[in-house]
Amino acid sequence: MADYYVYGRNAVRECLRAGQAKCLHVRSRFERDPLTLEARGLNIEVRLCDDKELDRLAGNAKHQGFVCLSRAPEMVSLRELITMGKSKENPLLVMLDGIEDPVNLGAILRSCDAFGVDGVIIRNTGNVTLNSTVAKVSTGAVAYVPVCGVPNLSQAISELKDSGYWVVSSDGSAKQDYDEVDYRGPIVLVVGSEGFGISRLVLQRSDFIVKIPMVGHVNSLNASVATGVLLSHIHLARSK
Image (cartoon, rainbow, N blue to C red; front, side, top):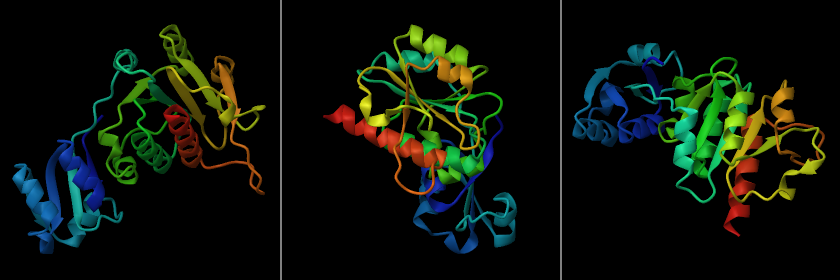
């Protein structure tokens, strides 16, 4: 994955602190801004720019006067995720099936960081990849949550189950509510896209299929919102 531009004050701050920043482009009047001084203190090159140049670098997105060239996060292997999980009592992974919107992925990574998820698994094809929009929406969480790309989710599930993980998939057609599952132990939470849901093979390999009960007029939630609801419950259930 190639280096990319991160934009917005919060995303740039986390990029600096995660050690991924290569060069900071900043609005000229922010030359003495604390964030600019922090970059210089870290020996990051700082370039003063006008708004036209910042707009170009950020793809005309809202950058708040700060655009940073970031090293691309290194993807980890599935084996690395499994090995890292062995040192934890209740490792938690999130697997995404068919998430194509970078805003959704960024928001999911932000929730994963907030609730202590140990890694996110995506397909190498058919899923959105890590990019500047993902980094912006995640407010820097992309720098802290390990992401693993695999060629086949079903095969990845087989390897995870062989390593002791239980697979919990979220699907609106489920008969079981999400709060009826014991989330202690190694868990993989699978979330699908709003349009197509989770693929048939992944559902067949799941140990539990759960739903979020709803009482309103809309019968589905945005994928990132659903992920946040589920992760919040898992965190709460494990803390009792």
